[in-house]
Image (cartoon, rainbow, N blue to C red; front, side, top):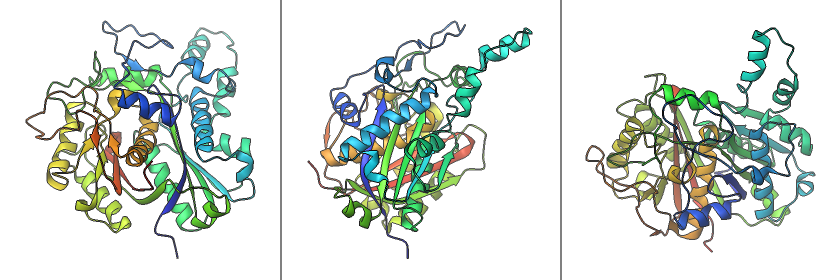
Length: 396
């Protein structure tokens, strides 16, 4: 019989908010961080739309023969191992799976290559070779000799959350002793231009759930959870940071990019996650919302919060990280657990005024919290909606 949940024994993160999960949390509680013009590419827009970049110095020792997305993933994985007081060698005796979500990543970063080809030149094949070695899950599995299943999930902005949900199922059903799971994504001129063309990028710092929000800021980063069976965690002498108790996902079948106005898919995903966790909505103590700062997304999430979680405190963290696309669900799952451990929610940077159409606001200041169960939700293009429910471990 499957277990009720999967133990979380390691948590790692790198994004614009910090180079480790601890750095991220500390900087968010200090209210630090702001987006700026992209430095790795330039676009000919009359308006420069700011982004949240990870500094190159954070990746200085990484393998430059793989994509930036894989480099970010490696740093987050190393952080998760360090926090668990483990090395990759400690995992070798076990059946280890890898399940990582991503979105655009580096798969479309061949503009210069294509331009030279169209001009009749013979461009260097190095970008193609880098792409072929940069499947995130396959790369980790091969580098560290992990012999369990490995899968890369590409499901737009819910990819990281979906990868965690799948990885937890592998643990619960006995397919793996350990699963390295999460999401990673780098900034790309393709996605940058795409969001500008959709007219949902903000020319200033994003304002999730605010009455005057103008859109999102893109970001980059990676989040990793190391999941294990209880037996494996005990064999490794690892402290249990928490449990992944529930996962639900459902499509709206409504629109290519806009969420269903009545949150049909999100409500069904919530039902599935709560059902798997054997909880009801009143038992959820805190929520990390998707909170992109776009008019449509925040309104739809607000409808759900007002109807199903009228008194539950929630935080919107993309004011510190930007929207990291395929990494967002994993980064925010890591934040959810870390805040539960801390017993406090950070301020929702960028939010100042409640939108009357929503009627609820994320926490505006540091907010004390006593939480057993936290929820993190991700809404994605294609009408994908994914929800994770996490049970916290002992607070520090």
